[in-house]
Length: 469
Image (cartoon, rainbow, N blue to C red; front, top):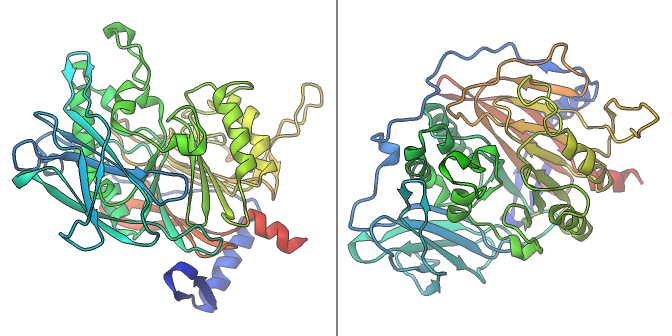
């Protein structure tokens, strides 16, 4: 049996027995009998790695760029935003780039270099540069910095927007900078995925003393640079990015995050970098803020309604939504915490046939069946989730490895809507094969090894309906 990866100009050969097995598992999944994994992981330090650990090493050379990370820079994947820090003084804000190694035919000019203070911390000098008008499906090499302190990296642009474009995403949440975080990141790098969808809670700097918070933002960015400098990470904020601390006169939410991480929010008509949307390959991806106003008449509400109306499933058949706090969660931690957002947005998720909703916040893994709870009104009493083939699957992936440890207590009995749940660290991959099918895997970090633990064959919501009709 063949799946066509149009933009790779090749066929993906999948043995028929594997496809049959996946389809059988998919049918079994629809029986709505949930699994609570019996796996109990061995103890592994849930503490941040020491600042002298090699993953936090400062690059050599005076004022050398560090903490390099990139994200998508436009709506359709033909631009990147490159961000970095120089520690001692403002550096060159230019990015040299080209399609051959060490041959940089083009130069992009960045925005104004800035820095900020937070309590007693003063940041390095923050650089940001938009590199645009790139070619699809092309590897670019780029250089930042000057003289002997210059550093070189590369990235690859996605295939053009096309319903049958093959693409592989990784999904990570609540990462932090512990030894478990390192295991997650190393396993993700081995996966072959090309872009990270990050569901919030980055550095966990707010778990440290006030004097150490800024330094832990720096160490986190040096830690993830090994991957974030080479492929886009698409972020949303979590509760640990809020950093509202009136006791030290820091009352501007998200200030450290917003100084360090940007998003292409204006490209999707958003008024805030905290919620936005992009199209990438065959996917339309919507990023929401669980910690910004979202009820009727608010900017996020009005923007999301307009964005759903812009989705063209004939061009981007796969529709994903990211948020931090999960709408469906059977763990004791943060149980029903996002109920108000569910009430506001769930009917839209069903109406527009969202394929998957990813969230973090709960430090464990869980995948739901396709269910909805949108029948309720104030008088009818219909307040239970029911199977709904127009609804998304809900996936909680807040298991990146942060220093707060695992959320190991689940509600018992397991609710009917919950398909699989396990309190372990890990990451997920989502491999889009074509406009109709994708493979999803959750990979457990098992004592230093990556173990595929939960998987499902996804049938695209829009094209499944088209085929039925």
